[in-house]
Length: 252
Image 1 (cartoon, one colour):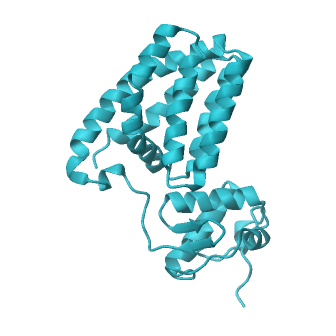
Image 2 (tube, helix red, strand yellow; image 1 turned 90 degrees about the vertical axis):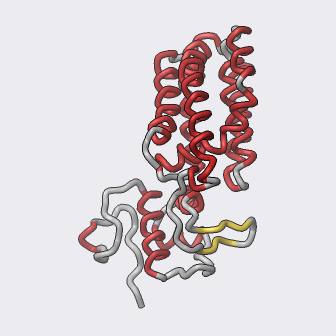
Image 3 (cartoon, helix red, strand yellow; image 1 turned 60 degrees about the vertical axis):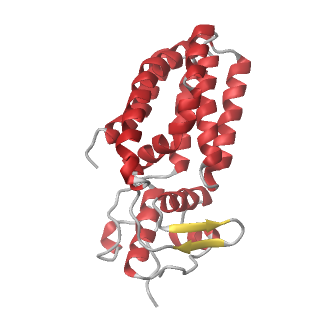
């Protein structure tokens, strides 16, 4: 019988030669070890992976850690999560750059997305800072509700998450209580909807991670706005958008 996998607090000396190196964040360690088993055929394409409870026992971690690892593997195209039906291995596929979708049209899509991001970086960083100064209790509650919608959409095909993403950024503008900024943000909302699939795909490709972590990044922006820290809200929004722009400017 093969030895059980190491828990996140065990030292690397007890690991097999192919086990992921430590130290890693627990969810990253679990993801890396499962990815190794997907690569070496332990879980062949179509095979059902152990349940969340079983993986928690094997790795000595909590359900949220396993869920995050599985969400990352799903974003990478390595597993399929069926509602109430378990998790199944898929054939190997690295996180996809959105250029892989309709590559012939990517040049024009990228040019449009680049222009939208330039506007967003100018507009939304200022909105985040002003929202931190002007937000009310009702604004905070509305943004919290939008984040909950985004988190509920983690396990769907992406459409709900994309819609909640757009609404969240519009909600930041509304929390400024500056009608001109709100009008400016609404004027690009249709373009935001059209570009959000590519924007989110670029973020996930840049981070090699999951939609769950993307939702947490939105929550970190919200927390800065909620706390009234204008400088930190601006910094977090800037960093959020900069990741997408960085990958967009890399050769494909």
